[in-house]
Length: 347
Figure 1: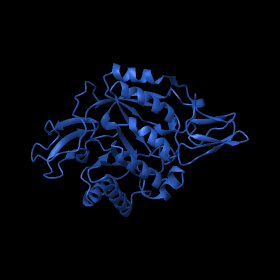
Figure 2: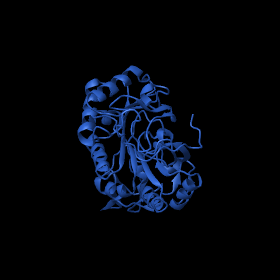
Figure 3: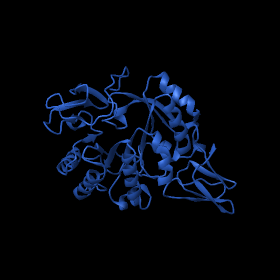
Figure 4: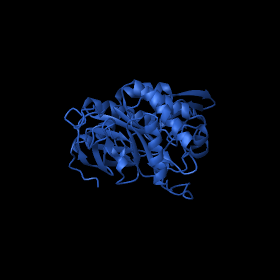
């Protein structure tokens, strides 16, 4: 455990956490809402520092990041806890528990970097559960990674206060941010948090302004956030605030955790969402969790040629020049880095 960086004492052994907008007031001996930070005798500690629930070598496309070092393997790690309580969470067995409930591996930041180097991964992804509640460890590991020329990736809900985000962003190279809805009512009902939208939007804009490569995911849940006007508003927000070339992923919901009574998202709903987003002016809009669908692919926004063909997380076609232009019409495509043909098989 390690003392938290962002909190203040309130007296009577109470503390107020300042990491995320919940700003939990935590009594002595109790955890905050994220189940990762605990008040011990008036000092707030990260109870997950160096504690690893999962390690894996993933394709970058799994994050999903489609415009950042395509095909590359990324060393992926997680801990436990989350500052949201999403009823549909696919990783609830690690996101909705405290470190007291699982046996966790312990690694220091230097060891994480050594693993990435050993397995020839040019990036480390902080993923699976919410990495921002792992703030102190992610910050230290990201600093160590930078020393070795390894990039850092956040797969995050984006729900963090401005000051800690400013401290972390200089060490982050790419992020996929889950903008779950454009409406606060969705966050209140499904994620059990108030007034989240403005904070997540601010995170996305700050990342973009800090030159972090950003892609956005919107998981579409039947009856909850699948209305066309909501999808249109979300698409317009992305266009107007982070630009027409920011990749947007509409992904398919599968029943899990506390939403097993809802059906999977109809593929037509995802196709219609993409049509709306493209119609509003976004150039790179994808459908996720539908392996083999043609809209997993990247197409040239000018001549509509197939540029990158994908099946699931694997690249099966590549029609870009060395400087990431369309081979057919020469349109520059906003992809960071070059394709890496990994020795790992992800099919």
